[in-house]
Amino acid sequence: SESLQLPKATIPTFSGEQQDWVLWWNQFKSRVHCNSSLNHQTKMDCLVEATKDGSAFNIIKGFSGLGSGYEKAIKSIIDRFNNPRLMQATAWNDLRSIPDIEDDNSNLTEVYDRMNSLAQLLRSQDVSEVLLDHFAAGYADRLSERMFDSLWREGDEACDKVDMDRLLRCLLNHVIRH
Image (cartoon, rainbow, N blue to C red; front, side, top):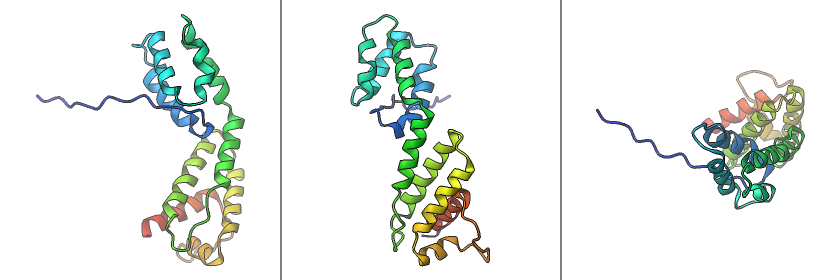
């Protein structure tokens, strides 16, 4: 019987950019932090390797020589980056920086991908749908009339309310068509 050789999972890196925190922490936590077969020194080595090229390293570098360094280092990095208000502020700023859709739709996939991932991040932080819908309405206001009409055309449905789910659904439909 043949066995399937899966590639070794690499440890993700974290530069210290707030917008990368959730993805990095979820991966690091599952591969390293919650891995009971790794001792604290190995976990610390992984943490140092994962953060060595960014500002996050400055938070943990003083703990690397301590016997109990990993627990203190991971607590420090979690305390610094696992901050819902900071994550939400960063995500809101990223949402505001999403570009308008180009007339030729050349950036449609980028707009959809960015908006969808940021909406999911904000939802994971329990941001209300009312706030997400408020952002979606603001984004729709930035669209040209032609783009707005094109984007919102779904059969004969009239657009009386813009919400995040509908905006994402319409964007995805456009991505699929173009």
